[in-house]
Structures are given as structure tokens and as C-alpha cells.
Length: 206
Image (cartoon, rainbow, N blue to C red; front, side, top):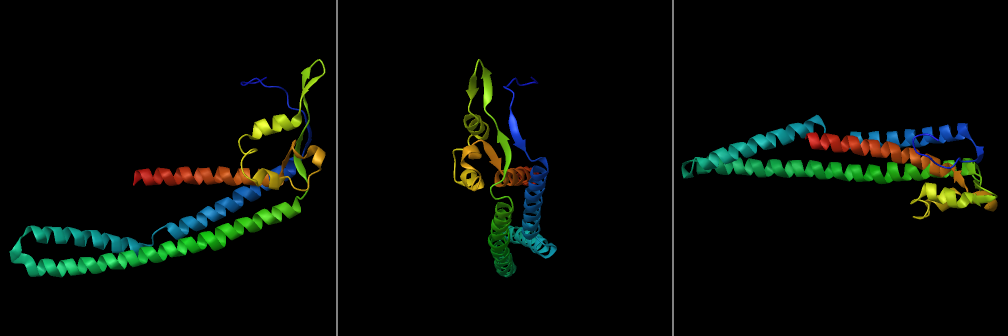
């Protein structure tokens, strides 16, 4: 029974090769999309140099202010330089944010829709996993549809994704099956969560 006892699962059909292929597609696409976004979000050396110079200039302004009215001219000059440096950095940051937003919309979102459409068409109507009714004994059974919903909870009750992934599958086995899009999405979510963890770790280090 293993570490966690459970009823034996009777599977009438499982397409192992297709499952591995779809997991690879989902993981590869999510990895590519995240790497592209990472490259876009990573500040270039020129921007890092500007931010470093800005920090140093801020320190100079604070130091000059502490010297009092006798250094008013020098302080004013440094403040004007600081104001211009802040505007330059803000302009670069705004331009980079605009680029990231464009990449997210045109590459990531549209690319994700394209990959989803291709997978949906290629595996249309194919049940990758089909579960049978689970016997309880003495002629009693747990309907496969009930068990599948329980396993996939809460995603089986939220949104249109699960319903969309099963379009084309025969009605009599539709609700006891796992379809191609659900398998691909699971790989995408897993890779996405790993990247989120990595991002959170590096943000914490900073």
C-alpha cells in the first residue's frame, strides 16, 4: 500500500510516450519564456553604472549640504547634476519596463496561446489517461468520474481550462480522463514555480 494507503487505481488506458512528450513541450516552452523574460529584466552594465554613479552623486550632495551655506554654489551644482542623473535613470527604467511589457504580451502570451493551440489540435479527442471505476468490494464501486474530480481538486472546479482540455473526448469517458492540455499545463506550472522560487531567493539575497 505504500506510505499513504489508498484504493488501487484501475487505469484502462495510459499513453506514456504522449505524456512524456507533452511534459517536455510544456517544460521547454515555460523554460524558454522565463529565460527570455529574465534576459529582458536583467539590468545591462550601462544601467548598473548609471545607478552606481547616481548613488555616489547622492552621497556627494548630502556631504556638500552638511558643509553649510559656504558651499551653496557647489551644492546647487551637485543638486542639478543629481536631478539630471535621476531623470536619466528613470527614463532608462521606463523604457526597459515598456520593453518587458511588450515581450510579455507579444512573445510570452501569444506564444503560449500558439503552443496551446498546436497541442490541442494534435491531441484533439485523445484521452492520455483513462480511469476505471474503483471497486470497494461486494459489488460496490466508486465512479471513475468522482475519483478523477477528487484527484484534480480544486482545478476540476475552477475555470474553463479542464473543460477545454477535454473537448473532443468521447462523452462516456470524458470526465474520467486526463487530456493533453492538462498534462502540458502541469509541466508549465511546475517550471514556473521553480523560477518563482529562484527569483524570490535572489530578491531575498539582495
